[in-house]
Amino acid sequence: MRIHGRIQDVYPHGIARLRFGKPNGPSVIRSGLDWLLARAAGLELPFFDFHEADARGVGPHPREPLSPAEACDALRRLLALRAQGLREPLPYAPYSAWCYASADNADKAVEAARRQWHGAGGGGGFAEGQGDALRQVLRGRDPFADEALLVRFADAAMTGCLAVRDGKVYDGVDPATLAGLARAHDPEEGE
Image (spheres, helix red, strand yellow):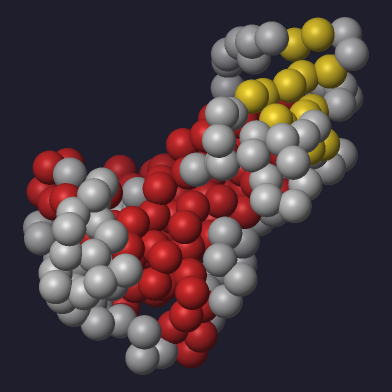
């Protein structure tokens, strides 16, 4: 497959992407795709992200060097995930996926993604999984209430996030790491 496009704001001394606040799913995807596409095209320029990071300040946060072959492999995996989503309902949403992928263990990952998907606590807030498109595509099924769907969500989340964040091809979720973490949503839960 050949991809044609334009990467904006490429300068002789490098490429920089700015995000006000902390990274989230859509911002990581945008910045990561620019990075992967630049690397796949053979642009050897430094790539810097500027965003709020707890201990490291706002940046610059340099991206690791990545060979064109590694970038192409990550892009191929993202295109395969897209193709899968065109063939069947894919339990995936960018904000929830980022919450999952940025946590440091499976328990925290599932809880953070579940909160993003359903909204924090009984008081509402942004509930990504309540969008019309996701509700229709998933036919009302909750990826956090069914173990098999949770594995599919985690696999899609890690596949997408590791590709755009680290340029890595993800091998898949070990279902044993998520065993027992699926449960029905209780709207009365607190944060």
